[in-house]
Amino acid sequence: MYLLYIANKNYSSWSLRPWVLMRTLGIDFEERLVPFEGASNWERFRTFSPSGKVPCLVNNGEDTVWDSLAIAEYLAERHPGVWPADVRARAWARSAAAEMHTGFATLREICSMSCGIRARLRSVAPALARDIERVAELWNDGLARFGGPFLAGATFTAVDAFFAPVAFRVQTYGLELDASASDYARRLLALPAMQDWYEAALAEPWREAVHEETIARHAAITADLRRPSA
Image 1 (cartoon, rainbow, N blue to C red):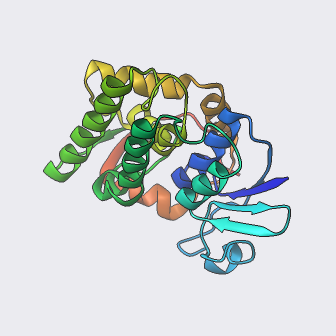
Image 2 (cartoon, one colour):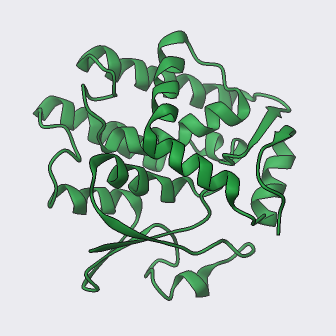
């Protein structure tokens, strides 16, 4: 049995990736949620993750795999459907997922994931505009190449999981995309696994100061749909 360590569903975009991938593909796992506490969680997270970060996957108490991309590749060796079967679609999907994994720094910083709020950005700097444009370009490229409704074809794969946090960012900050990219974001948000994650995020009682301060620095909160903090 897999054990997947994650952090707050409201904030942890990295945790969402393997969680939604495994849930959508029907790969059984036990969830272990360890909330963020302050700016550094190194010591707490090091009790289960060699990197001191989430997510971290443990398989039967033997293999420990950290980092969301490594987890996707580990699962791909054991379960069909993690990556597309078609070689060209698979190459594109891996490239797009890797770009998401290492890039889009401005989007990550200014539009920090917070599923349970709605916010209006104070400004859209050129670097952020470029990141948003590139997201739409990637999404439209995959949809056009492989026919949709998912990025690499007819079924949800790891590349969709890697962009799932962006769909929440689109919803939270009202990011403007063209019609095709907007429709894709809505398809991701409508997935049963994404709906389950979202409902759990709204129910969380925790507020983590660093995440909250980052959001407030870049955006004005217009609605907070989360349960009252503990």
